[in-house]
Length: 414
Image (cartoon, rainbow, N blue to C red; front, side, top):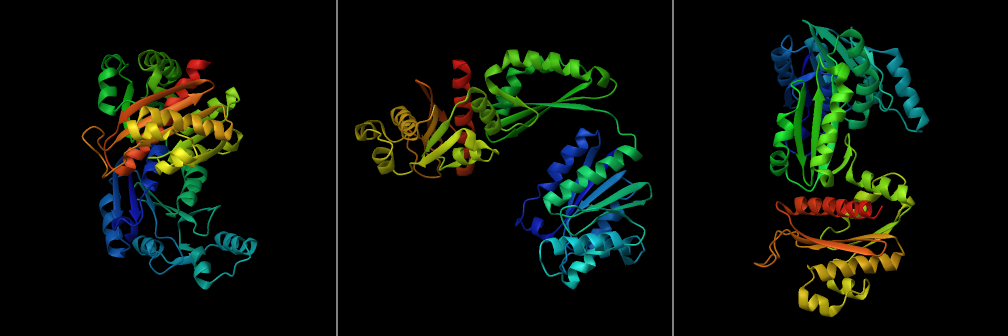
């Protein structure tokens, strides 16, 4: 089954909003064996939407469109679809009842524009939106299924999971595929591919490998297609076991677990607590750690020691160490880790100090130079990194590397 994705919205085209919906939808479809052949973004313009549909209808088995279903005048998708399918907008009683209850439960006044969100093109199948007021819509024409969904991510996701995917599985035979993702950190995509060249060459023909890089992280997605799906679990286990033997120090988890979740699991399992002292990462390591629900079980606090005065005054880094070695050095990083561990009384600590750029670099310490120190129990370990890219990318890479470095230290102690 092949699919096209359409995003409607001027805000996407002018760069005001990042379209994360197509990435998420593509993952859901890929997991069900549906191949996305095209992604298109169109403005809030009826003629452009209609022309795009003319080109895609009949060419694809499935089209999923997001955006343009809100209550404001610029949300024209619904009327455009009604015109495209030669129908009128009619009030759907179930949608109207749901919208009425939605506003009543929240104690909010319902405007006429909100009432009109219950209007849908006559003949479409209405998809119940549990998290908002704009229902989804399902159309069929010329052998193509067209699904229109709200652009609000959490509304779209609920409709995809509860309405769209179950309908697809019931009505269409979707080839069975099995996916497993191996999460790696600490080695760039090209180097990782070189390390795994022989392993990749020995993969069975029914297994597809994809490298999915992001700053600091590379995901290895293994997909088993028919006719091998009955043995998929065993095939994946054998090849992942081989992978663990090649790059054990770089694998931190499976199936899209985040680094911070993996660290949190380890800290909770071992009954350990952690604090962070951050300079170049500016609190990003703490942000990542505390993004995990119930991270208060192990995270106690952080000191953003951006100025040397904070490093020496609060963390008690020796002024002589700063003067002799510089703020970006092994000595300072290790003293920062020891200091924050002492202040918060934790079992573990992470410290970062570096040059995130774009200025501030020197010949000896160019932009991207970062020292990371991690402490666990009585042990402390530090390492120098040289990251590249933008300021944001350097901060992300440093944060990921810091979390992974602490994981590795803890695992060596177990």
